[in-house]
Image (tube, rainbow, N blue to C red):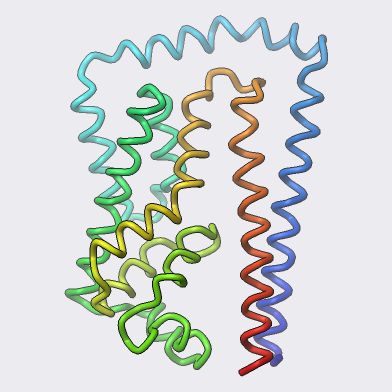
Length: 239
């Protein structure tokens, strides 16, 4: 492997191991929070968190809230400071679990479609041009010019890949829109579930239900990054 490949491999290995360590640390933190002294301290703030939760649930016009969340998903296509995790958590805080999940899935579909159409109209952008310069990445992504569904799934499943450039690339390649949306949402699903449940249980921050999505998210992300790194190393070794 060349110097660039070694740096990439080291960076992915470090990130994957770090995420697994964070998952283990959170398990330890949860067991620490079960201590009686911490539970007594938490009880002092439980009533305040409950009142905030009830105030959010009592908001009258859910239609306006849904419209605002969808508008934020559209803005996410062009303003990266608006993050998908924040939007998923917001929906989880406002709506019951099933409704929040539905809102987040529809919001992601809107976001993915907007940037896909942007790619159809204006091309794949700088990220696409950079990836095409590398023969391995070009072979993996383009798949005879039509787009690789497995690579799309990996892009969506692993947290280290930005959302917008991938959407724009697949739009520019003319990949089938419905297949693109289905694969993207399936790849996103573990993250959407985790972020939504974080929002749902945001007002019970010392419960296992609040800790568990973080633990699963870090563990799945770390494992998937290490697997991806091993696959890339094998491809580069054989190329």
